[in-house]
Length: 222
Image (cartoon, rainbow, N blue to C red; front, side, top):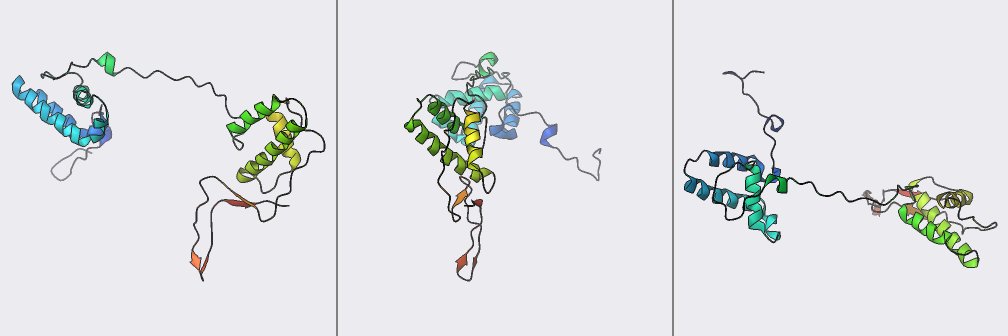
């Protein structure tokens, strides 16, 4: 809609010039643009110091850096698109130095096979798979199965068969582990509940002196 005497043209940030340093806001950009219009270099430099002082107040966290004053001046030239003729107290930054993208860090971790168990379970399985056969390895498999059953009940169903856990162990180990025949897991009490980490919050309301607890709790069958 065209603006006229009876209407007001609204300006949106999406229609404006994109900020190179958003943390300083558009007012700093306008100050920098006005710096270019000052014909006298001495006066322009004096105003540049004032703009840097405003930037310092808008971004106080920059003082945690070792060379924070130079960093502010670098930011000033970045905002000005490196087109600002003032006497800076520091060497002028170059675009190729400031616009260099950080080096990507290669990730060596493989995707998690079963997210409801987590990556640590896979590491434990690799450790157990390297153990020699014997009573100690059987005990380790049993303890792992108990823990995996607990994790399973947190994120999935209300009950799970022991055989399902044993199959998951063998599958996650790429069948390097074979669960011994006759191994059994301890029974879970019907009063036992498992809560998701960080989500066991109290959403209940007190009624008649009692407090009802909400949250993410599941109860397992015997």
